[in-house]
Amino acid sequence: MNKVLVLVVLLLASAGASALDGVFIERGEGNYVDQVRAGMLWKWDRTWPYHGDWLITGAWEAAVGAWRGEKPADNNQVIGDIGIQPVFHMAPREGAGMTPYLEGSILGLHLISRAFAYDTRKFGSSFQFGHFLGFGVNFGEKRAFGMGFRFQHLSNAGIVQPNQGVNFKQLHLAYNF
Picture 1: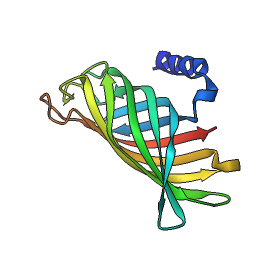
Picture 2: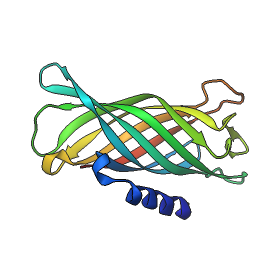
Picture 3: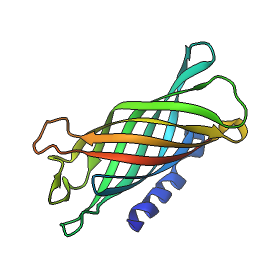
């Protein structure tokens, strides 16, 4: 797990900061699987008004991370994860202090290093789809900091059996440049 975090830090440090719009880290758990991820985001040059005071924006998120099986008395594995996903973000147009947001993603693409977290949690293939719903608050100068909760589901959509998938409850922390 520590080697993955070192790799993430090196990747983030080597990326040109001017090309990025933000970075994030996540910590999640679900189905006796722990998760940690770190990534980068690139905002879309597009906004859509929503009911006057709200805007919908979007970004691409790319991340690397690790999962670890935590089932007692089972064959627990560490799994590497690399993924990319489109994210839709809805927040007030203007605001001071803490401002709420809603977000979601569909059709994220993930490649995992093993197809099982423990003997009774199997994913069928290394290729997985992901989607999530989340909410949180942005705060700080120019709302640069974000803290939120996400519920994420990953599975191979039945392409290969068994397809047990995994559901993560995640704490998401972000910094926008």
